[in-house]
Length: 259
Image (tube, rainbow, N blue to C red; front, side, top):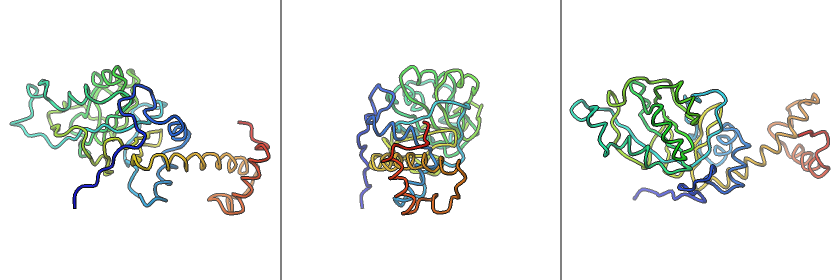
């Protein structure tokens, strides 16, 4: 059988806006946590969507939401990978920085290698200047303090200061990758927050966003009830009765809700 294609749905990879998504989809994802989004996809039979082991480079960095543009590395080989080769305009690592579209997220599959950097501060600054929303690697970045200063949202396994050609060879741009063990196709939606990173298949993003918005609204009702001393039993996870209570609460104007 041939490879199944996964065309983006309502994703504008080359849009210069901060969303790169339909506004209502973007807003729903913005309100949702990565944990909630992963749970929703589990309900659709997808259990491997969380990029486990990745953390934000900077505390308090902006939430990252956008379509994936990918770079894949394989292990370096000494007769091919050198600083001279790295300086070539044909080098795919450097091309990724110039070709990743504005409004996209650069997703780097390093094979979990932290023996060399997936990128550094100069590349981060160039990505930000070009309108790229952020970068994600299952390896690590160098120049962490300077990247924090650039302000580009970034997620990594751990810092990896050595020069890229020591251990990594760029082999493909914008093809399917396995980043942190998760299959990511170009255009899949990347969401990163303080807990980590989740990847949403592009063809599911509208459904996931719609369900995420319902979950976020129901959790307002849950928080109010927990604050008043109510048990989680019959409340969280939701039950038929609690959903009926929730609908009545909404129709009554959300009494007691101050937000």
